[in-house]
Image (cartoon, rainbow, N blue to C red; front, top):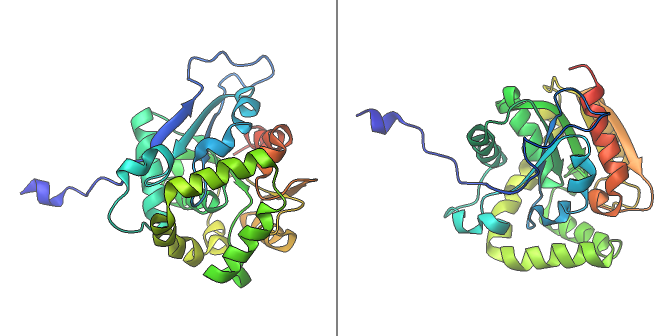
Length: 257
């Protein structure tokens, strides 16, 4: 009888990078080095964090993951599209299994929505939020507009970034992308952020056609956080300017919670 009352386990996310809890803390880091959890966006995987990982690893432990249905978690793709809350629950389950709490959660693109939702659902797991290239501004919440903006961004990224993203899109396939897209378009990041109690930094590349200045400023205002613009890079801000992005993220661990 009790089995019927047990909530189902969330779809599985997969750790792809873990610099390890045993990593010695740098001399300039806090006595207890922070844990940075990296959450990717729609259609892709954690591979595009490849340049951000070593930059953040100078400050603490870095854990990157693939969300259910994407990248190395493709075998755990459920039979239907997931909501942002369900993706957040998958991240929460992964962190619980790893014994990680009080993390700085770094989301990119749709990953920003998941990070915000995770902070609301499991505040014990989150000490700060770094929102990189957040989606979607209210006027962009339709599939056609999102596709056009993504196409424009492709023309502004470097060759390596495009190679990773396009390769991951092909690995994902259109069916899972389209199954996930409605959740991304429907999520109201600006409303959820109003309930956030942790430090927040919202970061965009100056050439990002998706996360534009007005939208980033609005999110920072709603969260009581800060907005930052990184010159010369587009939507993949953490790939085009990893050290500058890492410096902005690391400010969160020096802000009293």
